[in-house]
Length: 486
Ligand SMILES: Cc1ncc(COP(=O)(O)O)c(C=O)c1O
Image 1 (cartoon, rainbow, N blue to C red):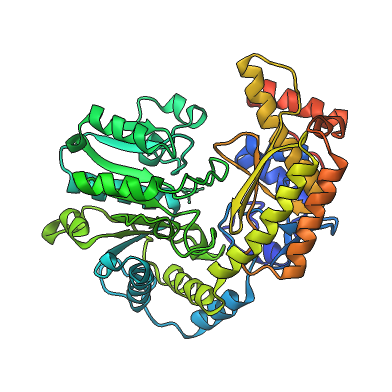
Image 2: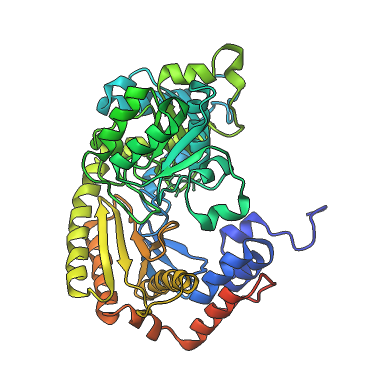
């Protein structure tokens, strides 16, 4: 084709898998997030991986693994036929505008209405709530913070909770109290304050200290996901809601990870007795195929920021796009038709029972297991048991989870790290994973525990050259990397 730069890679080459695994890794190391991919490459986790079934992926050698990763954003697995069949239909028949920024859209209208109906079914006070769409979780949080700030004009503080995770753009990052992600960006957005998660009395004390009128938002995950699957004590969320309602402080329930069935409920906050003013959703809405984020807001709060001529005060280009909305709509339909929140709760109970049994059998490997629905966590003991200085301890903690991830991977299970909990590996399988595949997944986790009964086995079973390369990786500053070829 004329005018193409030399080496231009054609869609057909990618689609028909003419780009080899080593070539993909080479290109990514050269032009992508080199350091991250280099680390994954050392561990043998860099892929590329291809879909075999919605629940299984294979590497370039044809080794199959069950996918329990995807950071809770793959509710129906990889390329789920129910959604892809509908996408074909959409691409063939849709005539609605692609990006209806300046007009109404049937797809957006339907998804707005359905989301509000679903929420209001659990929380009737949301019957006339309004929705703002975007393209990621962090952007949904940014929107939520702006709605709250406009509502409580002049108030200085936003409160979030220890080990919480709300994203990595500046506003959400300011409320994600993790020095690893925050430190080099200081000063962050002013007024972000942290309270211990699950401790209502501490929150009340903080509020007294700040002065309730000076707080414009409280942001809370009903179960912390990236924090390592932390379930708050009963009464924490409902109590938090009560205190905030008394003082007129908007509560933002960050349901980006928990919402739409992952924890066994449509909205985990509602299940725990919280009636939040703003709800953020993202991950599962896009079914792993598009990016959809949503901020659902009580009508008066929505109108305060986006009223009259100020209705352009918050906007984006892609939020509400037809394809994203259509996929979001189909995802909701599929969740409803198969009652997947209930299924998630049911499978999750089976999973947690088995993980608890492993915890009892292998206490030197597993320090704790936690979960609700298909959001499950294994917290490992440190693989080096002796007391260490704090810097080294952090590295050992992180390496423990990383090596566990590698060993699970070798055993046929793809799992997730936890961004704000260093020794915790999470399993977040598809909500519609067939029972026999789910059973095999748990069998493989059990086999992994049997072959690594003590956390130090994670280190002992890792080939020395992998450990050496990882140590060198941790110690060196960025430089151009050479990928391994497998
Ligand atoms: C609770 C929660 N909030 C916000 C986010 C950020 O979402 P995203 O990665 O789409 O920006 C995440 C992502 O893991 C999350 O778990």
